[in-house]
Image (cartoon, rainbow, N blue to C red):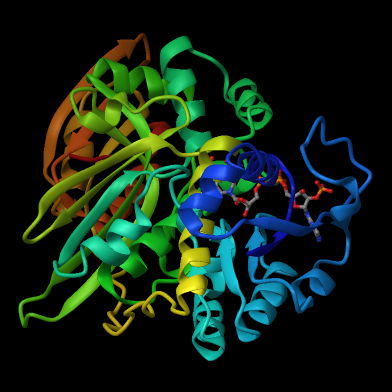
Length: 428
Ligand SMILES: NC(=O)C1=CN([C@@H]2O[C@H](COP(=O)(O)OP(=O)(O)OC[C@H]3O[C@@H](n4cnc5c(N)ncnc54)[C@H](OP(=O)(O)O)[C@@H]3O)[C@@H](O)[C@H]2O)C=CC1
Ligand SMILES: N[C@@H](CC=O)C(=O)O
């Protein structure tokens, strides 16, 4: 089995290392040796340490490598939309198997890749694209095909989980924690993708597409990142017995006429410290899958980093290599459902709102009246005074997100509201 490796950075170098260190076992498991015939990178002269590979294999001509007649499997660990899409479509149409970790591309234009795979009769595997080392996509793609998945909830971005865990545990600053996550190889080439929630949204779209048998694109996912989460939010969450996590929540629901639709969102949320997701620290990921017959399933493990991600890539390489040797390919994905996307405004959520207000008579009554006007029920109110100023912390019961957002907008315009210090959703 002859492999073309596209990319040799954090993940690619670990793929090379594992292929080298486990060569004998992999040969036995596949039934044929796995041989790298070329490695496409941007800077072939870059120092890659003691990588166990012939330096003559490096090239900048990725497309030329993909087109080589002797390549069976293309492994893409570069990232981004272009030129990765062009390379992978070329490979798939030519009948070459593809293994990729590129969630951004799958979320943006997965349909083009799947169509090219069908056209070329080729395998397209992408276990590493969601939740690093955790075997999650294959259970959705295979084991749960006989069941109806109703909800997928979890932490799917290691970088932001690392940052939020550090802010919560040690009081570390945002920038400092992001720098450390980048140095550890968790962050994307442009970490904005992590901290603004794009990476988690891409993963959410992949999970929802597989779980609900429908195409959910990146643009269908409601997204908020963690850049607005402050030390004050973290402290406030602690006071309530909560912690803050960047959550991915995908649900399939039926309306009164029995018509199904899906809602997919990514945003920071407060969860009680007693919840199992609260103890998911560092760059670990955890995902709950709820299915009608199976009930609740939990998947947990390292969600980022070179070696954990390479483990998932290697698993896919073995699978596609076995398929090629057997002259077969995996069944096409069943995206038959074509379900509508429910807007974020209809999602039932709860808000934690922290207001800096003037401390005088009638303030609380006016604020409560505005919540009532939008049909939002208040669960708790905490007030602490500071001379002329007071801090009001209000936690609501569940209400449509649009009603909660409209309430906050109206509060913002009140003359006695000095600042809306934070607005966070509360889940579970
Ligand atoms: N890091 C992680 O924890 C995880 C990453 N992923 C995904 O895996 C993929 C790779 O991530 P990662 O290894 O961290 O990224 P890196 O930035 O560490 O590595 C990217 C590699 O791609 C090469 N490259 C970049 N542009 C080109 C180009 N135009 N032509 C040829 N080669 C190019 C780079 O070359 P050079 O070395 O010369 O710069 C480098 O070797 C991404 O899709 C990412 O989202 C998925 C799960 C986890
Ligand atoms: N940047 C990503 C890497 C894995 O997908 C993350 O932090 O989760």
